[in-house]
Length: 268
Image (cartoon, rainbow, N blue to C red):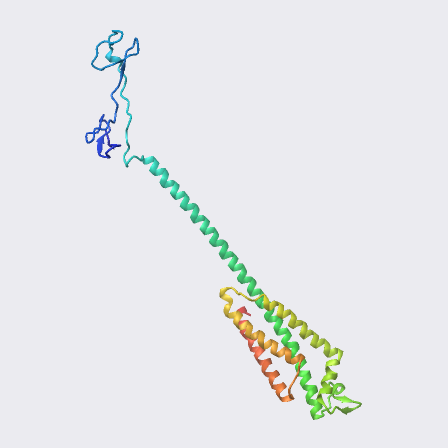
């Protein structure tokens, strides 16, 4: 025997009860009797069929049929509950797996972006260092021609720029003009300009760095500004020899310091 819930009043009743003792709801229908001869429905108290007079055989009464049996749990079977729980667990598992896979994919993409940014950072750092080295050679030659013209110092390396017909130029600008027209010197300045063009292009790709490279990008911009100052002094000298020499020396030092900072990010 077991206790079930009445489908009408939801009170506890025995599963063997034919009707609810609380509200009278029929739980098990009374069996119906039919005449074996004519099929007429007969009452349980009848001894013979009222239609054909055939005696009623009590031995062949139909078995009781349960029409309403409500399982424990308010009308939901344990099997249904278990299936529902398993289904929920499967759905939760699928959602968790999808979230985990997406997270791993995002982490992988972030690593790839970070590694690529570091590689680009290394490329532009070295590119500016090479350009700065070219600019340093260029600036040193400018200062030497400029100084030797003013002080009329003989020097086999600069005489062809500082003198005309063996006589020193009265104006250092004449010497510098001759220097900048020299094919060998033009190769140096063209190399500086080409390097600057490449650096400018690379610098555009360095914008919007990954979060872990924001400090590096800030220092890269400072390094870039010093690099531009140095290379511009190489291709466009101006002012007096003293101011030019001072400006060039400062820009050269700042560029070297900027490179040193970038090395700390790149683990050189």
